[in-house]
Image 1 (cartoon, rainbow, N blue to C red):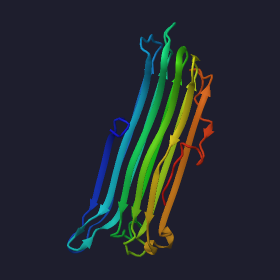
Image 2: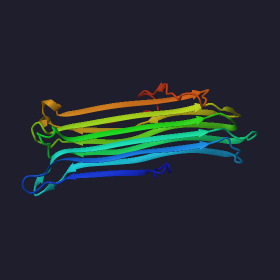
Image 3: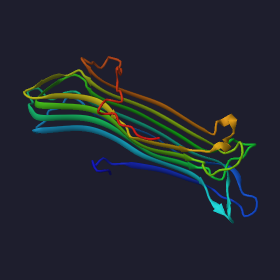
Image 4: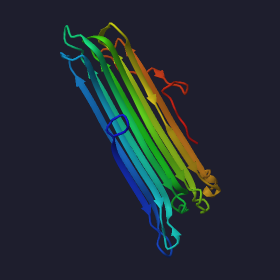
Length: 278
């Protein structure tokens, strides 16, 4: 669990390239961690005999992939050290409203997806010219789909709050700065993140106080790539590529027959958006 008492699942992978005492080991060294989890909460129209109602679906996963060489007999192992993480989180919460005549003080309906990844590759032993020009490769992918649906029925309450939020915390590091194999000391880092959050409101909601509907993405990326000039012209030494997509929408007047869509893109000035790295 983290500080918010959300249970965290963990998947980790570690790969070490071993060096022989004389001529080293020549290989591709892969550490790969993958996950696909779905959390689905479906609550039909129900009668609630409580003051404060909370309906929630939370989905979280921590991935760790570490690929690196080791030293045996004073020699570093050679070969491409590649760390791969692929995390897919789907969280859908759907409610059908309260019973006729039910009046609640507060109603809180939420869905959340939280992806954490630590992905590191160290290729200081260098790659092998005839096999690959890359000594260290990091390939991270995170996809979230979080939807909270008020699919018909009625809600009567003092206040009602509905939210769909994605969070991530990524620590990515590809390092071959100490590798010294000409045309085989390249470094590559790829980071692909696609977040989608939606609140779809198709219920009749009557409150004496506040109604709140929010969809957003909170991101925290620490991305580092370290390379040198030995990677060779063909690999440009170091290559870094990011493909980042953040979608968030609140759709009023939603019905079950509607196609769920995401129409509002968050920008870096949005309070849900946070990023740092190098």
